[in-house]
Image (cartoon, rainbow, N blue to C red; front, side):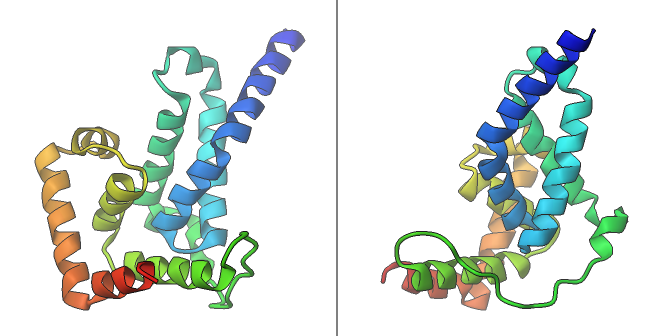
Length: 174
């Protein structure tokens, strides 16, 4: 039984190494805060690990894990670990390239997404950052494709009205 457990753990560790960056990016975009995203992802990975022995039957372990992240985010308000309040301090950027412009763009995206209600934010992240289809997004969120389309439309209308899309387009063109 010990060999089976170590094989399971090794498989899960390999999965996490390959999927962590993508899942964390999704969590950051959903929460708007790196630390909250890490907490969200940790909680999601615990749930995935508990069910890891069923992973052979999953079409895609990463898609399953993404669904767990989104579902946990949707119930965020009921979770005790959401009671932490970020300090508002800026985080250090360690990406290569033009760090100042990249940081400004990331902060703008964070502000833009934070202005959206949770359901709209989830749809925007899944459709435009995760590049999922309307049908894939609907399946992941457990709603109809029409709901995904209407939430996307409302989110884009809200962003246009706030001027956030124009600001982001101007920043991206530089």
